[in-house]
Length: 167
Image 1 (cartoon, helix red, strand yellow):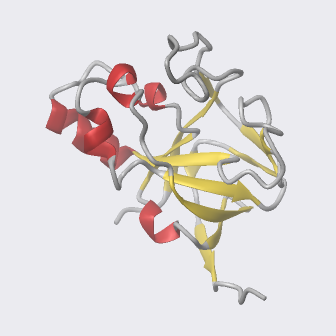
Image 2 (cartoon, rainbow, N blue to C red):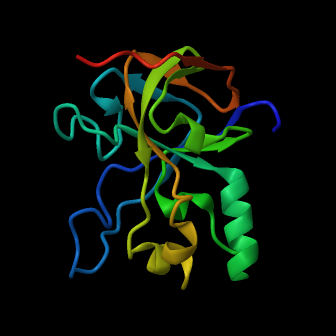
């Protein structure tokens, strides 16, 4: 795998799909940023899940560019941006599945993987028919933010910490 890199950083001020089952999607833009502030236990500054609820498992979401390219090819859809998937960080060279329950740092910010960011039925509308099924098991990573910091596009040295014993 190539050197870990953060390719794109996205936030959205409001929910377009979350909590809208049975309704039409919202119209909040997904905004690309040249940097995003991470606040421990709170989320990404300016994002719809910032201060969403205490101990929320999806304070930040990561998605692999390699998966995006493979899905685009498999479904024959090449006119969509990764932003339509509404994940926060588009990565390259990271095995996100391996970080599913790990504590790790990227660019000096510490995270705890909380498992897959499972695709929902909205993926077929946001990306294209078949996206939800294709993304099962490959939807990205949800994580908690454990330390304050700033993320920027670029190389992202990865450090993984041993699992802590639970009491």
